[in-house]
Image 1 (tube, rainbow, N blue to C red):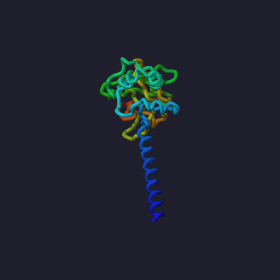
Image 2 (image 1 turned 135 degrees about the vertical axis):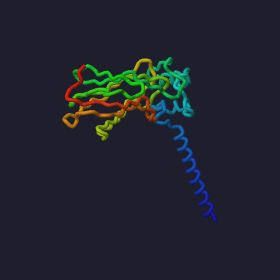
Image 3 (image 1 turned 90 degrees about the vertical axis):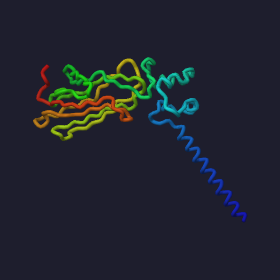
Image 4 (image 1 turned 180 degrees about the vertical axis):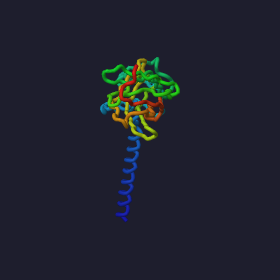
Length: 232
């Protein structure tokens, strides 16, 4: 009888320890910010102090985030370090960021940039541009960010020739906070294919999306690869 009582006490103790450990794990997970949270930081020393001050509950607009705890000097400096120079006049009340592309151009060494007009409907009329076979080039663009932080902005591009997909690429651009001045980004340099089979007309689709797959610009267009650059 004594052994049975002792076993029962041991079992209850193990269950209690397991329950306490489970509650501790749940509590730890609940306190952990998501990858998309603007509170994510690499510094571990200040994490516990910050977690006691920051609310990781309802999503807030960037303006609310900036105004919240504005009298807390440590939080203010930390937010400025994380977000950079955010212009309050360019911060909206919306949870959704706004990204507007202001220029697109093709850069090739030793040549003037080919400035590409951005169509309002996303469908340029006729051939959008011509590339010389075997030439080095890269896409350069500028864009404005307003309202809120745009997270994980990326560029995707798919190319077809005579209905057959010949290329597909994706490039991460980054995460950007609202500001008055436009951001400028240049994609890695590429080389056009060469040879008789490479020349001709191509169709393509380019997109700029964030990590929620919200599309800010989609362009469906055609372009040519020729023996030489188009005459200007």
